[in-house]
Length: 159
Image 1: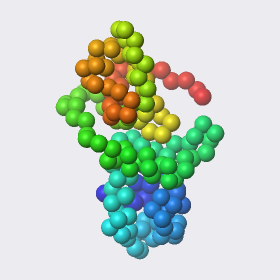
Image 2: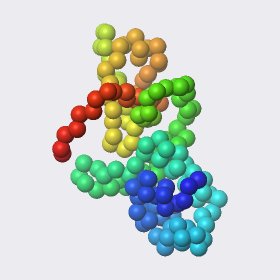
Image 3: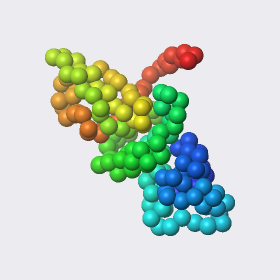
Image 4: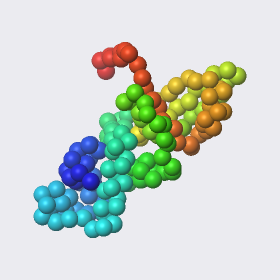
C-alpha cells in the first residue's frame, strides 16, 4: 500500500476523518503519516480496503448540502466497494474510464431499459441499453456492474 497520507489525499479525507473511521485520534494519523508509529494489523486491513475502494474511484465527496459524508457511512461504503462481491472481469478494453459500482435503478421498457449505477456515494451514472442486454447480463438492482465510458467528445459546463 502507498503511504497513508497519499491514500487519505486520494480519498479526499482529513486526518480527523480518517482517524474517526479507524477509531484513533487525529494525532495518531499524523504519527502514521510521519512514520513515527504504525497502524495495527486490524487498522492496516481497513486501510487496504480503503485503498481498494480508492482504486475503484471512491472519494469522500460532499453532499448536496455542501457537507462531507458521515465518516462511518463513508467507511461502510468503502468496505462495501472493496469487498462487496466478486470482481467483474472485462478482459482487455481500450477504454480507460471504467467505473465499478452497484446498480441502484433498473427501469425496464419493452425494447430499451434505463440502468443507473452508483459508483461512489451520491455519484451515479445512467445509461439506456437494450432490454435484451439487461437480461443477457442479468442486471438487477443491487448487483455489481461497471460503467464504461468511451467517447470522442466531452461536453463541459460551468456550474
